Every structure is written in C-alpha cells, then in structure tokens.
Image (cartoon, rainbow, N blue to C red; front, side, top):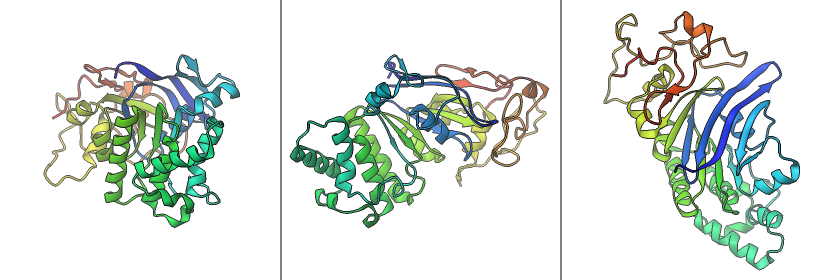
Length: 326
C-alpha cells in the first residue's frame, strides 16, 4: 500500500468568510482504507465533497492519476467519475424515490457503458444485489419499501456497479442500528478485498474506524491534527484532541487519572474542556487551544505544523515533545 492513488495537497474550502478546511494534505494508496475522524463540525463531510468536486474548493490540489481534479474541465471530470464513487450518510435520502432499485443500479451502466445490452445490464444488477446480500427480485421494488440497512446496501451496490478505484464513505453507518453497522462494515471490507477499491472512510465512531482502517487521520476545525497507522494511533495517541476522543469512548475496564498539568513531563488529560467546534472563524494559532489544558502563548501565535512523531506518525502540536502518553 505504498503506491499513491489519490494525493491531496493544501486543500482549503471557504464558505464566505468562514474557513471550513485549511491546508489539508494527505494521500490514499491503492487498496487502502484511510479513516477520517472528528467531532461534528470538524469538516469531515466538507472534505469528502471537495475531493470529489461536489462542492468547490477554494485552493489546493486533488491529484488523481497525475491530473488535478480541481482544474480539469467538465469532460475530463466526467471521465473520472466512474472511478470515484461515494456512499452517503442517509441511505434513504440518497436514493431517488421515483426509481426502482434496478433502475438506480442500472443508471451508472447506461451512462458509462451505453453499448451494454439490456439483458447484460439486468444480469449485472442482479449479481450486485446478491453480492450485497439482497435478492435479485428486489430490483423491482422502490426505496421506501426497504429498511435503512437495506437502503445502505443498495447505495453501496450502486456505488460499486462500475468497480471504482476509490470509494468515499461519508458516515455510512451513523444512522443505522449497532448490529446493522457491523454488517455494513464487514460488507465494505469484503468488497474492498474483492475489488481492490481504496476507501476514504469518514466517521465519528472510533470502534468502526479501528475495525476497518489501515491508517487514521484526526481532523479538528478543518485541520488535520494527527495521522498515523491505525495500530499506532490507538496504542499511543500523541495529540491532546485525539486523546480526548479516545477517552470519550465508554470502557468500564479502564480508569484515567487526571494529572497535574504543571507536572513534568506533562500528562495529557483524558478530556477536552469546552464545547465541540461551532461555526465561525478558526482561531489564530492552534485551533484546539481554546479547549486544551496545556495551551501556551506559542499555541496562539502560530499554527502548529503536521510534523513527524515516529515512523508514519505525524502530529500538529507545539508541545508534542513534552506531552507523554501513559
């Protein structure tokens, strides 16, 4: 998983005077799953839509097969669409209520493979429905006749009809029951193994991200604050915000001690003060400083760079060398 499939360079998105994404850079390798986690309002969905050009980016580059998607014309972008697919958060709202399931799944084939015979289209739709755990006869039914989990399976089937190289999953299990979440995550893992599709998996559910991802990025107020392999991030998180996210996950088997912030070396607390990020301008310096127990003057003066903290581990924190994990 060392061959970059997608390269994001300094991506930024502004909505009027508000900056939603600021200088986001990362790569996705072929066949890799990259998890993106953060609280609501951190910019996760904005990032997903900007990468796929569903919303306009204000600056930066999205390199796909050597071409910047942000500057290519409509014809070139249409050509790339078959390799870039998305699964949305609301499974029912993402399906056209006026189209049967079979029509919804056949639509990408009609657009990108117009020479395909009708019989072959129907056969491919039936095979994909069965592949995601639904029977072929369901192709004649409408979205409102299915449960949320079944609608999400249909959405995944539609996205995978053209065997895309990249699948962006924008919180695909957040509206589903826990038992159904596990089924959908396992389905995505199986499809990835079968088709070799890379996945950008966006979620606020850390357990789901840990199960599915090879690498994880943590985003806060439009900036990546930590990135590492899945095992490294969950074993030794280095940013105070990441530690706070992990500490918020209920676990009756562990207990955290909140140490004296003036102790040397400083210990990262198992919490974040204040409220989750709200709409508005990103504060100067470190965006997390208004909730961090260890913020200093330097944290307000300059934006911390995403710097190496070990093999494949990067952290954006002015005090990362002082804060130790225990």
